[in-house]
Length: 179
Image 1 (tube, rainbow, N blue to C red):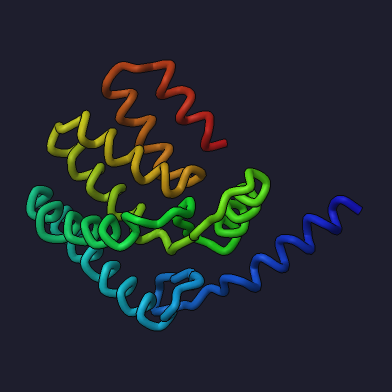
Image 2 (image 1 turned 30 degrees about the horizontal axis):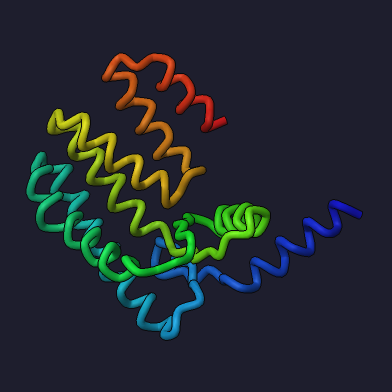
């Protein structure tokens, strides 16, 4: 009976946030007043992040941060500055459902977005790590993890930063959270 209840909850929650495929990326729709506008803005932000990733590949990490990652982060931070709900970002429908169910258990009101916002923090953290700015890199990866606490890629990056800082116990805990 318990399994049936869990399945029913997951099924009902998945109906609330369908995935819309745009090219090779996935956008999770959220309950916005203008969903179409959200998708357009999300695509614009993803395009900026993709251009920033191209700059990283060319070795220009500082310009990627300044011209691509920071503007995306600034836009999200301004847009959701006065939001009273717990915000998560999710890559997949399963991750979306997990955050929704976890929040429901805690009695939190939740707002789940696509992974774009947390991805911007991740890319900035990665770039800062490459620039040997370990404290800033850790600060940004923790912001990504606040938005997406179960993201294995972000947990791995945090573990890597902690490993470089010789915080062996913390690194081990970060890596263990992945599994």
